[in-house]
Length: 201
Length: 201
DNA sequence: TCATTCATGTAAATAGTTACATGATTGC
DNA sequence: GCAATCATGTAACTATTTACATGAATGA
Image 1 (cartoon, rainbow over the protein chains, first blue to last red):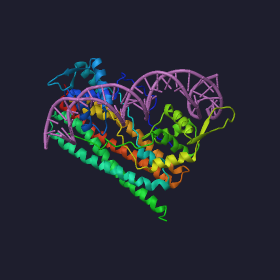
Image 2: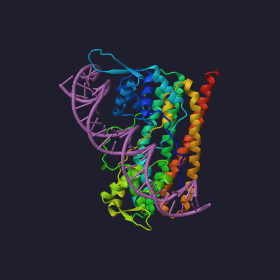
Image 3: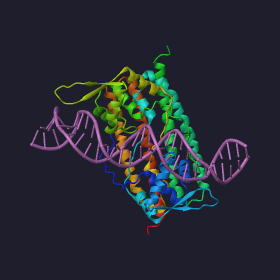
């Protein structure tokens, strides 16, 4: 048996920059932000395919600044400490170079639920039912979130072309959760049948 | 705008064991294996949702052995060094406890292509077309791999119930790639329209 | 006044990849 | 003889999460 994806031997080819810096630069191209705001925007808009934690954002901001891709505009209005970062031309260049670069590696990510199903035996099947159920309710929440996001983005002051591009990521998310919900239905049915067959003693 | 998934504040609750040990224990429940074989089996069967490298497998095997969950059966037939590991009752317990535990965290994983689309501007759209194209051809290969795997598993000597459970993971993979292929179609069309609108210089 | 949000950061642990080094065995 | 596969491992690096610490401002 074999599911092999051509994932081996591909040379990295990138400039030693991790995804985090691209995400940060990407947010900063929308406009100057603080570390806190960057995290918040990513959380609110890309959480279904990209997440960042403060532990990664703050060090990355420092690194990008030392590389001359962004600058701090520390406006001390009052005394409240708040570092607002602004992207520089060199940063924009780096960002577009990354966007336009054909290099792209797909990491399938890890799905613990599938791993459990793969290794499970009949006797364990009944314990998987509530887990698929949990998965399904998480997906349901997500579906609503996508619908809401799709509506919200219509009212935002964004260039219509950008809206369309962002739309493709929402499309991806909602299609994915729809597909996964259907998979949950099929899988639940199968698990319930397995449980029945075992004989309810 | 907000796509927020209830991913914050959930306590980990696990026993400090990473996914790798579960994957290794899972493979070993099928029968005694060497580190090399474990890697190979995972590569051949779960690559679409779970991958492990030697750098992780060998240290994990040592750790699991020191914890008394597995043992080495070093059969030196000839002189060729080969450590075959066997799962112990304590290891089986750990494995089933994990499978049956309702704890499950979904990490959405990171999708670089979606990140690019999210941040892209109209001018960059044309450079994204070949990237979506690349993505599509990777997915096409995958689709065939799932079909092949689904056929292969029928001829394997596996308990029919396990076959069904494993089947759910193949189902997931093939439904996912089908859905993503459709997304590629829609996205390609959109990108091509954007390119046309820009006016061919 | 008090909870929430805004805001910045670090330390430690955990996880994971990549590159390297080594060598035996199998099959053509 | 030679290529491919079997086989084990380590070191260094990169990435990522989690927990902690701190405190100001806002608004009810």
